Amino acid sequence: MAGAEDVVERSMSINAKFLPRLKAAVEQNALLRIGWTGSGEEVPKNGEVGLCPGIPEGARIKALGKLGSWTSPFGAGGRFNVEGEVGSFFGAYNNGSTVTCTGFIGRCGGFMMQEGTLVGSEGADTNLGMFMSEGTIYVQGQVGARLGNGMTGGLIIIQGDVEEDAGIAMKGGRIIIEGRCPTPPLGISLRPLKAKELKEINSILSDYDTVLSDDALCLEPNDEIGLEVQSNHVSSGDLSTIGLVPMGEHTLIENHPVDTVAFIPGTDDEAPAIMLPIPILPRIPDGNLLSTEDNSSGRLTRIQSQPFLVFENPRPIDIVQLNLQSLCNLIATAPVASGVCIDMDSLPSMNPEEIDGLLVAIRTLMTSESPIMTLQGISRIQSHHQSSVYHEVQAAISRIEDGSGTPEAATLPIMGRSKKNELDKTPVITALEFGFTSDAHDVVVARCAGADFVITEPPMLEIDDIEYWLQGLTIDLQNTLRNLGLDSIDILQRSHLRALDHDTASVSGLRMSGYERPLPHWFAR
Image (cartoon, rainbow, N blue to C red):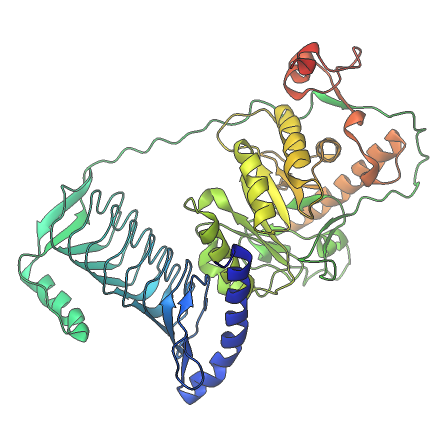
């Protein structure tokens, strides 16, 4: 039985072979086939993931076998037909393609669908059409729970029975069901189809040689008031209660050269790394904010060399943060950016095979040597680090403000233990995402605790203010290192840290200032 690495390798190989041929195939109106030899002999695929992302308008691909998760995602207008079964997230983020399957469709088919059509002939698993905003889904056969979960628009047509919570949290669109449907959840109405609607639906289904009967039902949101409870449980502190002390080194004179550079590695030793002039990755919403076209004075030097984390419009040196919404623009952003950072907390929970499928699809659409990073809450750091090693991503970033309320000082031993146990002797680096604008002190503390870099937001989003902030942060960082007697940020150690009060020493395990050792309970077994 093939292992996960073999499946990923086969999947990447298929994408590398077929996707470059699409342009010529479109021009010749040719059908590309996966699962057949050149002479037409059947060689069904078995479990390949992330196949054929972003197929363009006019492309036609036919696949044979039992395919895995994230098959034909991010479609941009082509046609993809599966003769057989398909796994989770089939046709996810579809933006104009037509994807069809003759067999069973796994969970989250048509996830975040924006346009296009998804067709299934043998039923589907849970969360079909989850978060879709436009397009049409038509499935014959039984469909699992939470059909149309959170959809905001579009049309779902089911000829078969559906399980519980159909239409849950939907805010727009329609779900048409010809079959048994349990009582809908709060805020969702179930009503008979109007004659005009029945005619409209049957006009759509005429392409599939079928019709709806007049006893079909329609699910849609009603005007009942829905309550939303938002958690605002954030960390109770910052890093100001942690001090920095030298370890016997003499203070360096003013203007002594200091190395502050950090690197985010590429996919292997030969792949180019992303250089961070200082160990931060500032995050802003739009890379267009960093435009230096009017920089005739040459004053915006820091911005030009500093990679940023952006959601859209990256520069070639920037990294794109991919979350539930920004993945919609993956085809445009992935080939341009120097790397991607996937916000795992914003996406549905995925098993290792599904994560592999997403990574194969993303890797296919971006520069193959570019780093991939994952972002997840600090309270899940151990499993996050384990997953990062398993999936061979380049960096594992922990979000401190994850709703757990974990104080910043307490994250330091949490990260240190997990890094030692899970990432030791692996190429995966680790980082922290702060919920506040970091200063040089915060960056140094994070580095002492084992973070390779930090993610933070600038105090303001005006380009001149960002440049001034970066310049000041660089100077402060260099001066802090000189005061510690260090000429490189790589020399920082945990022993340079001191807890300045009892509470900080209690949760962090740091040596308490004056006491000069950790509090006794940190030695208890």
